[in-house]
Image (cartoon, rainbow, N blue to C red; front, side):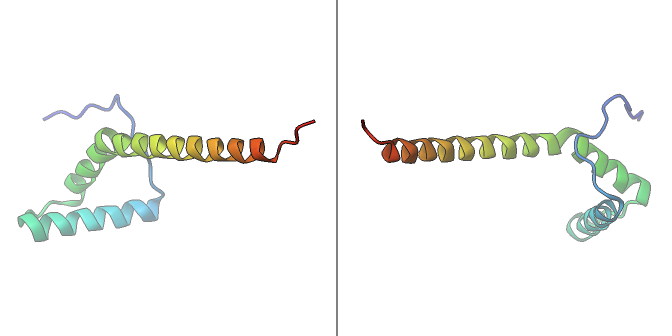
Amino acid sequence: MGRSRTKTPFITLDPEQEREALQTLKRFLEERFELRLGSFEVAEVLEVFSKDIAPHYYNRAIADVQLHLKERFESIESDLWALEKNS
């Protein structure tokens, strides 16, 4: 099975975070599915997550923050209107 290298990871981890993620993923696959993969295979699984799945979570988080900020700015605007003096 060939791997496509055209799509770069959307989210990258620092080396320590990546090492921890690989260990967690490897342990999960062994404990949950009795699937023992080597380091290269686990790294490939993590790469799929980072390129194809993580962007969905990232975009959802951005949308949630945008909604929160919009609501907060509307509240601030309302507070400012209440402070405005009529002449």
